[in-house]
Length: 241
Image (cartoon, rainbow, N blue to C red; front, side, top):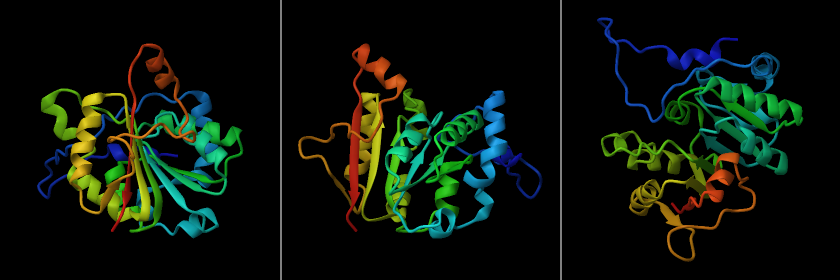
C-alpha cells in the first residue's frame, strides 16, 4: 500500500524544473511501527480515501446520509477516534499528512470497531478543492495547527483569507468552523482573519472565544499544557451565507 506517500511526489514544469509550493505543514514521513503498518494494510481498504478518487459522494462513502464533520491535521488520531466513537450519528473525515499518524489513527479506529470514520493522507488544501463537495459539511475542525510563530513564517499559517473562504464554500449554511490553538498570538491571528471573512459569524457570546465543548477531547499535550499554566483558545465561526 503506497498511496499514502503520493503527497511527496514533486510537481514539475514542462521543462522538468521542480515547482516550489508554500505548504502549511512540514512533511514528516517517519517510520511506521509494526502495528501502524499492519493497520494501514488491514484498514486502508475500508477507511482510507485517496485524493485521486476525485469529488466524493458521502452517501456512497459512508452508506448513509448522516452529517459529516471534517478535521484537518488530526495528529495521531486519538481525539478524532474518540469523537467518532462518541457520535455514531455523525460521520467523520480526517486529513493528515504524517503517515505514522494515519497508521495510528487506523489502528485505534480498528480496535474500537469504528465504522463512521474515513481518512486521507494528503495535503488538506488539495483535498478540499478536489474531493469535498460544496455545502456538504456540517462541521470543520482545525485543532492545534502549526503556529509558525516566527514572523517571517506567518504566511505559512493555514488560517488565511483564502483558506477561510474555501472552508465556507464547503460548509452547509449554519455549519461550524471550529479552531483551537495554544498559541495566543495565533488565536489573535485567527480572529483577525475570520472577523473580516465574508459569510461568517462568531458564535461566542462573550468576547471572541468559546469554552471548550465537552465533545472536544482533551489531548495529552493539552493536559500537560494546563498543568504548566498554558492557555488554550477555542474559536467557532458559523457560516451565515
